[in-house]
Image 1 (cartoon, rainbow, N blue to C red):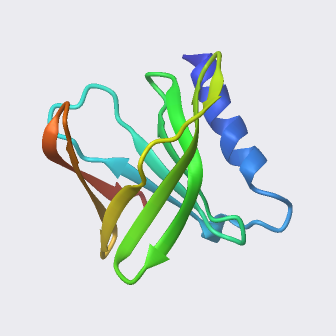
Image 2: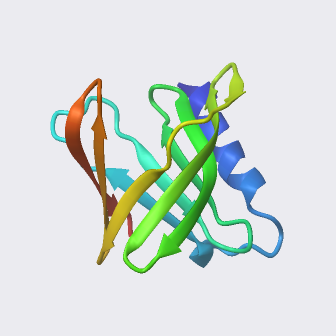
Length: 123
């Protein structure tokens, strides 16, 4: 568990440079019903527009860039990582609908069917 927490802190710290300030960082927690391990969406502002979808208690995550169009945030995944590996990913973009301090992630895939995840901003 300590290794996972350390990895989480290192990723956040390394993605911010000396001119990055905390107000450019937004953290959202997934509100899935019955979820055992919480997941988080970390949005880092600035020129790089980085985004990290991470489940620290399970020890894995996805790092990529994002684009905002009107009320939609589109997350383009680039890397999948775990506590002992990192690999390039070529998954389809994740689309989040933005409303107030929430992001609604709607997915429709062949494995799970249509399902929604609600991410609430941590204040």
